[in-house]
Length: 87
Image (cartoon, one colour):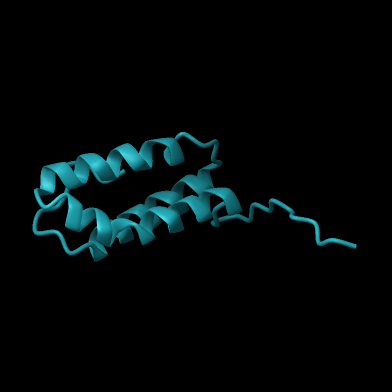
């Protein structure tokens, strides 16, 4: 019997779909930084990529976990300028 994929949402965690989308975005940050050397261009790209993920339905705990993950991505990013608006 093939394994079933269950979309489980736990309090304080992200759904599998949102988690996977954030991981994908995170994995592309270094390449995007090389492509968009001007901070404004990079942050415009980042927010454009983040919008569809942010639009996914989330409960309050997921929203908090999402915002924390985005904040950590921004904090760990090798940018010289902080973005105007994180998430």
